[in-house]
Amino acid sequence: MVRRRSLAFVGVAALVPLVASAVSAQAASGSLAVTTLGRHGAKVSTTVTVVAVPSGQTYSVTSGKRISLPTGRYLAMTDIWEQSADGLGTDTIGAQVVQVSGSTSVTLDARKGKAVKVSLDTPADVTGPPRISAQVCAATVSNLPSAFSSGGWNYQGSLYAIPNSSQLLQFGYLAQWSGNDSYVAVKNTTGIPAAPGGSFKRSGLATMRFSVRSGTQLARQNDTALQAMPRTDDCTTDLTTEVIDGSAPYSATVHVTPGTWQPRDDLVASNGDDVGGGFPKVRTLTAGQSFTQSFGRAAWSPMHYLPMIRNKSVTFIPDALIGDPDVGVNGADPTQETVVLSKGSTTVKKQTLTNWGIDDAEFSAGIHSVAWYDLSVDAHRYRPGITFPAGMLSSRVTLDWHFKADPNKAMVAPVFMTRFLPTGLNSHNQAAANSTTTVDVSAGRGSQGPDLKFTAVTAKSVRVWSSADGGKTWTAATVKHSGTTWQASVHNPASGAVALRSEVTDAAGDRSVETVYRAYAIG
Image 1 (cartoon, rainbow, N blue to C red):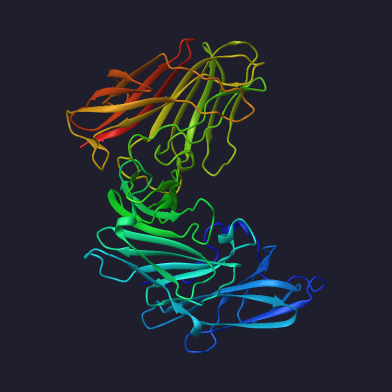
Image 2: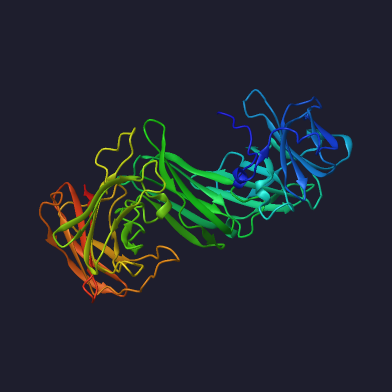
């Protein structure tokens, strides 16, 4: 097993500037040296995080080295890791409050560490000790105490914490037991307790289920995880438990202490590149509650951006055009697209764009008269340097919007995007041959920013078609309207894949046509 040394600066630490050297001699009027001793009393070299109270100015220094500091109060925090024959060794997490004045020295002694002990009425299939990630944090220098932290991980029996009752410190940990299911407990305390740890019961846990399907994503290797996200940031914020790092499709169940949790997914291509994934909506779970987080369900489609009229132009942001609706806009894949604005039979502007490696790609075409315009978008996934999985679904989408625009009136065009959710598919996003698939269809709109008028628009009609030959021919589906959604009955072919097309119109004549090619497979 490869040993990962530290959890230092877990979570939002990247937001905090880390000063790697001493402040200038003009500002400094004192100095600090921190000695770290291992569990047998010998000196151990560690990286010490030093945090000024209350400013939060943060420094990093190697133990035994002296750092120049202004006079004042500081927190010195570290993880004393000692290697052993099994490669994991021991971790002792500790911190001290230090008043720096002149030449100050302090020692963090792992021999004073107390074992972090957690217990759970585990089922019989859990046979090993829990793995524990723990950290000590500066509690009062910011509203983000986890930004100022030092910690590590190990298995119970090899993880220790040095007690300290200071109100300037917090101690947080995440413990995970692994069996057929996983069991995860998090706990935060003010100060480092004299007996760090806790006792938990399965009956008091909530359940998060992961359902990871294959066929739609840029890669099959899925690393799913769950992060603690307490409503008020504390020393457990962003402590993470890995669910499964494996090839889709798969499912997993994690039982967690009640609270707010962030599910996540990272995709790794065959060449080792991280090529996607994202952070779905955080979930607040109570004891006994169960929630299923899906990744990779068919079909992927445009997520958010609509045409806009502003500055006497029609503009469009070519982003989030092919994305996982269960993840959200930030989890959409990069695309390359051709965008065309037309007025009648006249092409106003045609442009090919990509959001791969570009943050501000935008289509903009000037208009000079009140008229009906057509904006078409033809997008396919675009990620140079990797090989897409064979038979990838939702590989291409098209949008065709027809709307009336006034160059002197800034507004979001009164058009829609469609979400298709085929039901009854297997874990490979396949329907049975020659079967009928019910597709839930919803027509959505989203505000594009506070500076543009966003008018409520009601869909007057929704029509749906399917194609079994890649879009050469189309068959109308039977559509039933229920509340704010529609259900389309699609008759499936004997093999191949099914493309889906929708047309949404309103009472004014605005029209939105969306097509997802290879929306789901037959198998």
